[in-house]
Structure formats: structure tokens, C-alpha cells
Amino acid sequence: MEDYVIEMLHITKTFPGIRANDDVTLRLKRGEIHALLGENGAGKSTLMSVLFGLYDADSGEIRKDGKTVHINNPNDANALHIGMVHQHFKLVEVFSVLDNIILGAEDTKHGIIQKDEARKKIKRLSKKYGLKVDPDALVEDISVGMQQRVEILKMLYRDNDILIFDEPTAVLTPQEIDELMEIMRGFAKEGKSILFITHKLNEIMAVADRCTVLRKGKYIGTVNISETTPEELSSMMVGRNVSFTVDKDECKPGKKVLKVKNVTVPSKIHKNNAVKNVSFDVRAGEIVCLAGIEGNGQTEFIQALTGLEKVGKGKIVLKGKDITHASVRKHSLAGMAHIPEDRHKHGLVLDFSLQENMVLQKYYMDEFQKFGFIKSRNVLKYSQGIIEKFDVRSGQGPYSTARSMSGGNQQKAIVGREMDRGMPLLVAVQPTRGLDVGAIEFIHKEIIKARDSGVAVLLVSLELDEVMNLSDRILVMYEGKIVGEFDPKTTTVQELGLYMAGAKKDRLKNKEAKDRSRIKSHAKGKKESAKAEPNRKTSKKGR
Image (cartoon, rainbow, N blue to C red):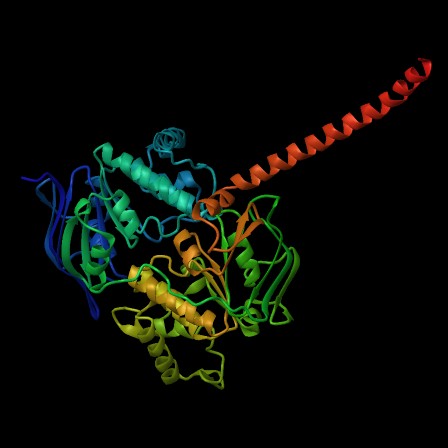
């Protein structure tokens, strides 16, 4: 008999208008990494939320170590040593890292929280698992990669041995993904069991032992990773063959659409500037990618470019119009569409309906309002067109609240809204974050189609495969500066990685230092030679 630490048997969960899980069975072995794969809206997060006690299943049974258990809330899950890192982190932004980790599991003495002991345990766990964090930093001031470390430490602090990761790599850099994969392997070696929700087939192939596939809420099958291929998994997931390459014609750049000249952006966190004297152009009909490891100024640059933050120095010109200090709406009216990095903070109003979110950039136009009153029929018709074209799935269609939708479908809604506007400049930041392979294939085709129609595209992506496949030019940003420009046809992922990590910059610095040293040495030698020359002449005369 197999040693299953968790068994979810015949789980069914229904929401208004949609059956998220339809008779799903999942079994997790002790000490294994088990991937859960499926399209956006396939029911993966719902199934894990049932296991973690966030939802009650309509029917079915959960067993822990062969015994039936009832998990009514996350406290019950924690008592069973089940922990979860959510796709959208459950952190209190104004609290410190330490306060977030111990929240709900505080050790008190005479009513006073014993933070010193908690701090020691957190430092011990940080060191053991390579999860370096600053316990006193505020969550609102740290990167998303750091926030994920905080979420993982929350699980470890509670001594959980069944770990659920919901899209853990969706917000991470390639280097952070490699680190996380290594950490997960370490957990498995210790005997911890991991459930790993992802859309990324290469990650499943690299780290998982087995994979269970869901499609439209139904169980499709469970396979051993050693006996399958990415193509087979993608076919199981979407029900058809998926292309992993991007087909595109040669780029034919036109006039300059965006001009960025000597832009500097101050940092919110430290005294140094986050962006330092950045200049480049984007032309009509080309895709320029801004690549770099998170925390090197891309986020601050894009926020300044789109009007979300102030520009310290420099100039931004869109279609001949200076928008350096313009408002967000004026950026939009000038011809900029923006797929933001953080879909919750800057992409959606979560408590608005899907159809209301679809007209956030247009509701004030005559097409959608008259005398200040919204034309509901026009809004509904317009939103249904985007929902259908971009396959945005939700329980109640255009009437669903954005908050109730899966992360991937929220992303598709934003991408659909921004691309449908047909602006001369598309600023696409992590456009395929959290999307399944079928949706990624479609979005990539739409971006290429926009480029070919004359749209200038500024892409910001941490996915090196996406960078290499989509870009016509690649700009690498390191420590707030553009340190290199590359043609994807003549560069390699390895070379890009070196520039992104600053290694090439260091090499250049060393070379420049050696050159300077050589020049100084040469100059010194000439000087000494010149001093010695009169003496030689004198000695000749003397002879």
C-alpha cells in the first residue's frame, strides 16, 4: 500500500455559475514534490483552498495519514501541519517581516509577545533554508521575491510538513526561481511533502516527481514526470497541441513613438536614485524589451514612464508630446496602453465587476456615458467582446467581481482591455505572468500582431524565453542603468544573464581599471625615460 500523507477523494466545489472542482481525486505521497497543472480557471487554487480550509467542499473526503479529517479553516490546517503560500500573498503591508511571520502564532508571556525568541527562530530558519530576510523591514518596502520568502518562513515557523505552493514562481526572477527549486528539493529530502501549482512545464520537469492535471474542473490524470514530456503535459492540460515557439516576420521599425532622454527616478527606499540617466527610443513596429533582475530599477522606471511616480530628471516624449510630468490619464490620452506589473494594485478595482473593469480607461468617453450616466448596454457589449476574444473565464461572466476570478483570468482581462484600445505605444510588464501555455501562446501572437500593425511595444519581462522569443531589441538594466543593448538573434541567454547579474559590468570595470593602470604605467615609464635622457646625453659629451 502506498504511503499517502494526504488524500483528497472525489472533491466537488461549486460557485454561482461554475463548478470549480468536479469529482477530483488527488493523492500526495510522503516526501514527494507533486505538481498540480491546469489552465487558468481549471480549479487548481480552489482545490488547494479546500485543503487549506479556506473553502468547504460540497462533497468528498480529505484524509491525513489514512484518517479522515475535517478542515474548516486555516487554523485546522495548521494544526494538521498543512501550510500554504498563496498566489497573491496574504501579508499585512504596514507590518514588519517579523510581525507577519508570527501573526496568529504569537508566543506570549503575561500578555506580552516574546519577539526575541521569535526573532531567533526566524534567523535560524532563514540560515538553514537560505531564505535571507530582514525581520525589521516593512513588507510594503520589500520586493515581491522577498515577500514570498516571508510567506515560506510563515509556514516553516509553524512547523508545517505539508507545503502548498500556489503559483510560487509567477512573481520571481530566473535566479530566484532556481533558488526556490533548490529549497523545494531540500524540503523533500527532509521528508516534507509539497503540492506545487504551476503553469510552467519546464519547472515541473525540473523539480516534480509526479503531476496531476485538471481541465475545466475535472480530473484528467496523474503521471510520473520521468515517464512524460512537456508536449504530453500541455496536451493533457489544454486538450490540444501547443506551439512553444513564437513565429514572427522580420521587424520593420518606423518612426520613433517613445523617446526617453536622461531619465532619473529617485528611490523610495534609499537615498540613491533607483533609475540613473536612462535613455532609449522605441519605434513603431518593433518590440523593445527591458530585461533585468528584479530590484534593478525596472519597476521604478515603468512607474515613472506611466505617470504613477514622479520623474526626478530627464524627459519622456510620446508621439512628439512631452508627458514627463503628465497625469496617468494624460499618459493614456497621449497614446499609451499599460499592462501593469501588479494586477491588483494598478490593474483592477477588485470589488468592481468584470465589465466595469473593462472600461476603466474609457468610461468617460461618449461611447459609454451621457450627461454623466453610464450607458450600461454599451459597457456590457464592449466587455463581452473582450471576454470572448481573450477567453476570460469567470463564474458569472461580465457580472463577476474581479476579486472572485482566478489570477490568470484577471491577467487575461487586463491584457485584453489594454490591447483592445489600439494605442500607438503598448507598455507590457510581465504580460503573461500566471498564464497557462495556451494563453501565453495566444497573448504572444496578439503582441506580434500589434507590432506588425505599427504599434511600438515596450516589454518588461523576467522570463528569458519570452525575452528571446518576442523581442526585436533587448536592453539590459542593472543597478538603475542600461548596461547593454542586444539583438536576440545574435546573443545568448547566458550572455544576457551575465549582464543582468552585473558580472559583465564588473568585467568591464576590471578591464578599464587594468587599461588605466597600463596607461599610467606606460606614462610613468616615458616620464622616467625622459628624465634619464639628458643624463645620457651629458655622459656622451663627457666621453
